[in-house]
Length: 397
Image: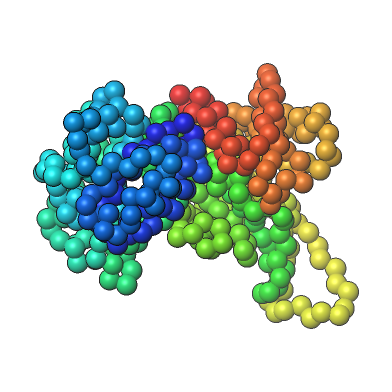
């Protein structure tokens, strides 16, 4: 997501500066190169040596005759994006007024003048964040095209956003945005049909691929609606899956195939594209109102569920739709044949076909099937999400 991106990281004197080391590590884990700039106040909270260790680069702690601010954030400077995390109320106000009395604010003014993307992750006590002057400063800086990563307001504090949210915002600012202005609906997860008030009929999908597509589309500038079929541990809002919610999409959680269909039809009505990555159960049952007692044999009659992409296509004849097709044959020719049948029947842009054995795994192998060609992808599901987003961008353009 940040592969090859140069991130200049400005660190200011919020207590959240203690998280800078891990944030720098996270940016680098996602492929970025990081160089840090620190205020005097920040150095009183986290030592520059720790930040140097985390970035594997020298840390700028003062502006000297080497004009570090220009070398980093000038028109021909090193940085692709300037990230201020954490940003204090003091620093945000100075940025809005073009006051340059710290290495961070000097880099910020240089970046804004040079057209380098700027991302700000504020962190302060809640009353400071609610101060009219601070809110005015945020509005002013945002009007210049600066992206703010909203803090988590809790316990009377505007706490710095999660590392994931900050990394996503940084990637979005530094990545070309071929999907800017496009509204993309993505379905993900595994639907479930109630058998009784306790038990459900579902499948093994984790929704990881659909969420990866949603993140990649968001990074490329799209406004994303994620219709997520959440079952048990696969709920998007669960800490085990995404941390503090999802910063990359308007989330609509559903459970059954009919709920997913209704939510998708509603979202697709005003959308520019749909990626149908959810593993929608093919069958539903007439659920019992009471818990079925164990110990006795029972017979469950399965009824077919509606075909989501068929229903969406009927309601939206011109909408670009991407389909997913999971098979169990393990044979590429059979997978391609099944994908082409769906491609032709529904009039899809393309179909991503894979073997069902990758459900729930972090790695995958898929075949991207179009009317005239088939291309293979092997790698992480995050990488597949990027591939789908890039192919979708070509479609909508």
